[in-house]
Image (cartoon, rainbow, N blue to C red; front, side):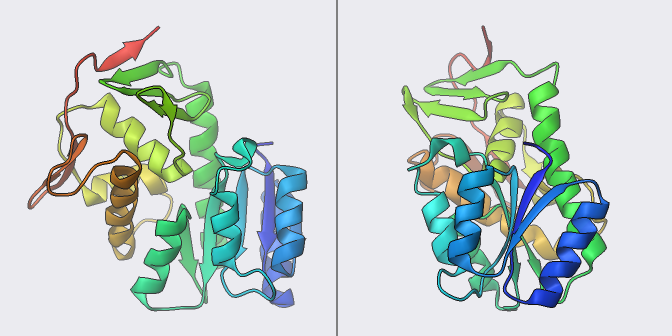
Length: 244
């Protein structure tokens, strides 16, 4: 499962290039040229990662993301969504992240860059499952299982994207420690691409999403505080630490 990828891209040339590069990198790849066919592929193949173009005939990328993040299919809760977008406006990319995408690549892009992002994302998924330090963590009402990628708040499940989960996991493993946005980018992108300063804004969006899902607000955050001039920190909670 960790080696299966679905690509949904309506431009036949881009689709063939992306599919070819990913296959050469050793992945099992399924590709579709429209949203409805691609969504059916995702539900049939249960990939670990989806490369998703935003502008598609029929179902567009936003609608596909909305359906996949709706929670109606728990087996796809951990699906990593990497958006492909030709839109240069930051607000458009932010909308995709707020709807549940994990990361984005702006067209035109280097196929090698895309493969690097895919490899980094799948490596993080695999390492989380195999980590010797993959104990269940508790922090007050939060219970996080890094092996099964599950989070509960007061016993109720909370659906996070893969990137949101990885960030919260890192926060909970280091309660009270402030992290800069660049440090958090290193976690979310795994240092795969060198200079990632252009993606710093995505950290703010992911933290905003985590806060919203935990019932937090930016000004009076119960779990993740803004450290002005630095970045963010996880507020120490009662019983923070590994749980058997």
